[in-house]
Image (cartoon, rainbow, N blue to C red; front, side, top):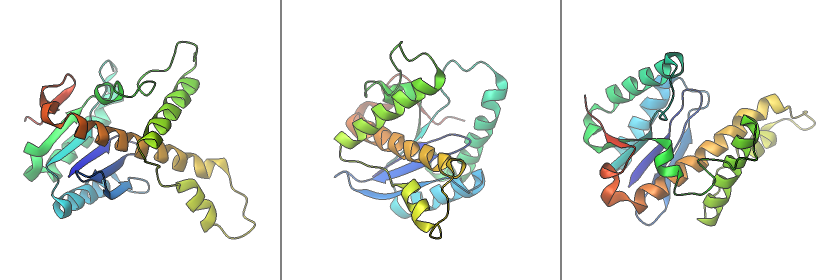
Length: 196
């Protein structure tokens, strides 16, 4: 089994799949503190015993310390909770797996704003995942179904759920990529073993 984690400070998602492609567990960090989320991931790891655990790393090219301090602290929490699994953990630059799925890592030049580029990339990821037989859990529909009849659905209450769905998709694509390149992963550009 391989566990992949689309890691971000605001919202993360993870998928555990076996060698036949069956998903045994998937989840996200919504409504969890970083400690609760990492504790949950460690519990799932102990239960399923994956041979590889891939965490998405900080992308290259971020220059501001303010942008990376929080995620570096988060990685420290991961290392503390996963100390028994350090030999199984790889840190993956997002571009390393995204380049295998055209449109996921980079939108065409005609998409000139950050929001249109992000939307293009999310749709490209959704289509790639769908073509591989994966659809993320419909968190928005589940939320709407849980509301009392007649309750108005507000976008401010569904935006985070919609974003989480894209994180599930990314975790799936990263997992698919991990299986495809499993034998050479540690030698690939942008993939690092855990060293202290």
